[in-house]
Image 1 (cartoon, helix red, strand yellow):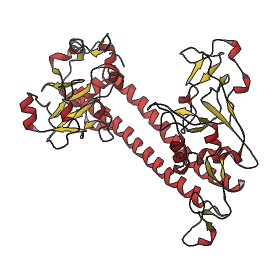
Image 2: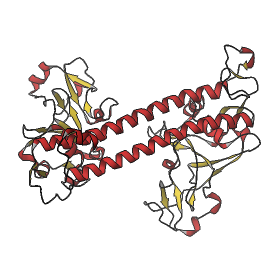
Image 3: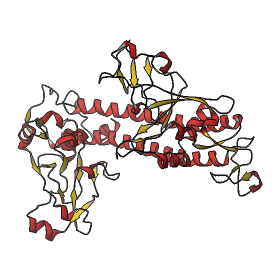
Image 4: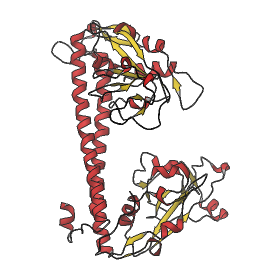
Length: 439
């Protein structure tokens, strides 16, 4: 967010008066990938490593103390806060705290707090700012250091700074706990998906056991599957596939009352994204036959290697959104299959591997699959009643994930409100630690 107006009760001082800012060093190509050193060397890409969610604890490059001295490099101290300062990386808007003396790349900058400034408070204060607002314009936008140093910082005691940091840390911890739970549920879903779509459910709704009852299974191109199941090409479960068109559109999304054409980014397994569309400007390009309907099973035929061939089930979409030529509608044969079952099947590793093998395209960022590839995807097909049971179990699990994701979104919104109130003085932080914990 941009810097806010402070409460009249708070005085301010320039951020640069209590915090030193400095850029990093150019890392010579001949040292790329060096892992045998004793000093971390952080690049912008390291900010997104899985373990570097708030604190920098690992990197893709290390250098030796001897090399650093020979090049005149001085590590930034533990507790410094680092961020990207150049180009598209500014959009990351990520801040990370160093946990040990660390070197950083020249596309990054470090904020080193003085003894008057609580490090946790500084972290949250910098996180509340959008550094793109302080970037110099040009072919390669970069953060204007003098402008950052002149930012008005609340002139409050270190004790109050610390209490504000405690409240915001508690909010972050709640968000992280929810993230951990969501990741655990998704990991469980992957295991559940594998079991249900290879072992199935018997009449009592229990997983079949290939060890206790091997007579209930048979070999197939997908491995062991229940004897009652068939392995068929996906086209055996479809009536036909709809493909839309991609006319010239505006760069913005369709407004109320306008028609829009979907982008491939609208298709995600976690849910349909109707806002990912482009407004249609020519009425001749509107074709109601391509309009997306509730219950549609959509698949992307072009995207990145990881995202091509993803499917989603559409629920209660807004009206006047059309398929593009890269978003296809799978019209399911209701006698052979359920849309919800096919949606889950297409998330499995054995289907994804078929898509990735057949994906074509010279571009590293965009791959394509043909309708023929989609139609010939090899899938398991139980009877409809078992498809319904399997989909029901997976849907319940997905609903748990969505509930936790909604909870996370609520926590993030609460955190934003806390940052706005506490970092501007609109709400003063409680005086005692017990009150801080309660908040």
